[in-house]
Amino acid sequence: EKTLATELVQTIEEQDWSSCTCSDTSFYLTVRREGTNIFEFNLLSSFALIKRWKPPHSCKHYEVRLNTAYKNKTLALVISHSTTSIVHLELCSSITLDRLWLLDLNISHTIGQPLIRCSSLTCDEWVVVDNNTSQLFHVKKDGQI
Image 1: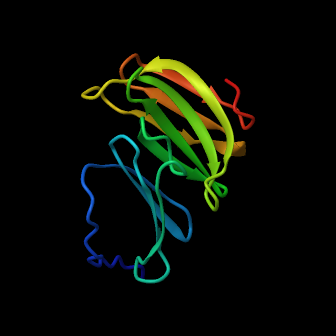
Image 2: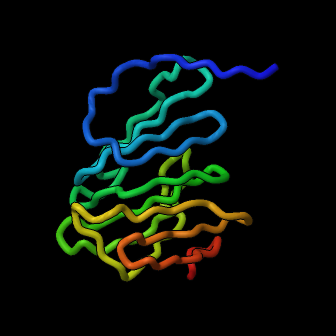
Image 3: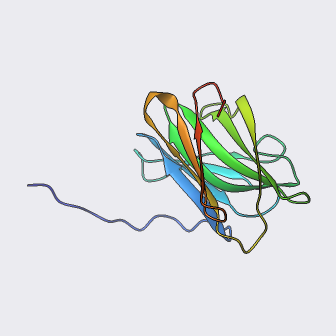
């Protein structure tokens, strides 16, 4: 018989959590504001904090993370420029946060609009959903549409 157990985890002193994703061993959490941090927690040992990536490694000080998705040791990050509102998709290593590729999506996002989401597909491909315009972007593994 399978059962589900819940457990209260430590309080995390941040605000306005915007996105999360997980691998088999880690839980990633981001904040929706300029120059956001990325937090990585260990799912296998009491939800302990493993890493906290800060700008400029996590993003530039003028960027806002809108969404995060995990697949095969990579993180897909939907990022908006806080001044121009232009959105791009960035694929990074989930281990080092080193950028593998970046794709300008030629769409914009301003605060108050629904978030732009991404999700993994098979074969290391991605789909980006712009709820503001109902557009879908199929992104191939090399970062091309």
